[in-house]
Length: 147
Image 1 (cartoon, helix red, strand yellow):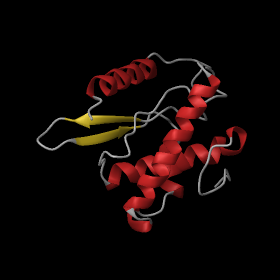
Image 2: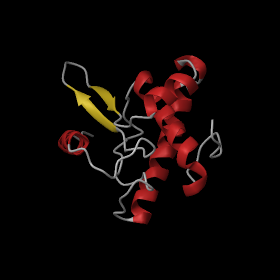
Image 3: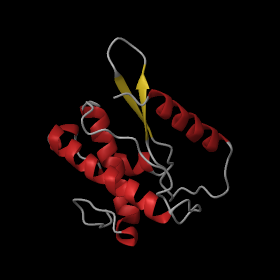
């Protein structure tokens, strides 16, 4: 199942909106990550996260890549994506710095995105959970606690 046109359009939209310098974007508001397919013989994906706070949080909070199993990352990512998309559907087209769940995430649990991508996506969701978990009842192994 290929989502090439949708993923390219979503990636372009995110890049254009990031370059526009929107005044509603703050360092505390996560943006939906993008899974962008890379061109080559094998189908590979790249995770694009446009969130200024994530990299520093990731550097100080993430565990080593082999800390959890690949199945752990994949199962939690599936849960997180479903919760994210439900919040995006439930709240409708809200905007502003106080609501992070504005866009849908196209994540197919039957697709093999690779360990590195699932690892980084998992820690992105943990980052979202640490910031917004309790406020929006975002699920996670940390129970919405702050790190």
